[in-house]
Image (cartoon, rainbow, N blue to C red; front, side):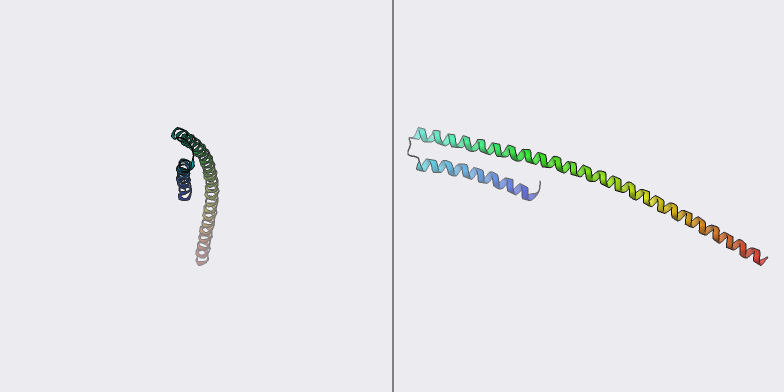
Length: 123
């Protein structure tokens, strides 16, 4: 998880908690009801806030799981691509080495022929 994503999630939870507390406090201060009714109202708002928070956390969790699966799939595709590329590179290097080996063998033959030709001329 990136640091920015962690901060956004943390900020969300802090904001949600502050909202629940502020809502309960406001209800307490402005409600013209008895203590029992006020407590029931606060409890109801707390339940609603908790339910809302749980729903949002579950949604974030599902999204995070989905994003992790997508990231894992992308990594798998990259690994496959690198494997293919390494095979192509290995094949290319092998071909270059073979070509170089043939060139060296050809040069050796040419040098041997020239030495033989020069030796024949001297005799």
